[in-house]
Image (cartoon, rainbow, N blue to C red; front, side, top):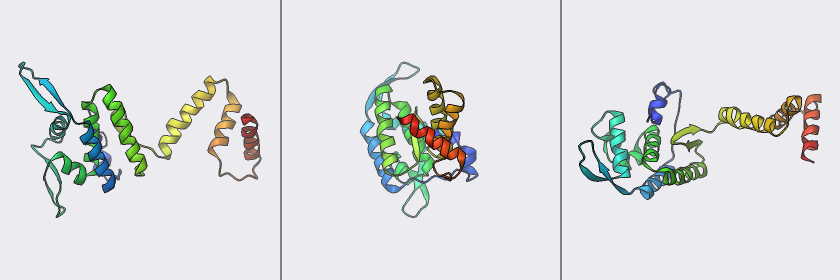
Length: 199
């Protein structure tokens, strides 16, 4: 598994990717993580039986990926200090918070993971944070994403629904150029076509 901070390492180090996670959202993230935490049995390579929890495994995963013996987060003096998982979520780097959520998703089964993902996305949406979780990975919902995925999917859907050629292109342009000048002939035609296609 390649967590968020590893997938975007160059962008984060070069400050090309700027992340912020508001404190209230961090609190909601911790509550969601706590809600899905549960214990389960483990068997190691030697056949030794033990017990652990989802969040204990998340913490071990993060320490392994970060190459550290303990987690670090900001203390009250804004100095990085040894921290537990809760402190990491509440006062760690934003990328570490997203790493934590992704690592947790990977610890959950299909049903719990789907529910966890839904709840996380609701929290991020309600707190106006543009990141969404899908299949255990965060992605940013912005104009580039919408253009690439949403409009691309709409175009494919139109094609499979019997729209093709110029008619599809006109519909795509009519739906993506709402702010164009109403005086241009193409915009008038596109809007007229869009109105007629609704009837």
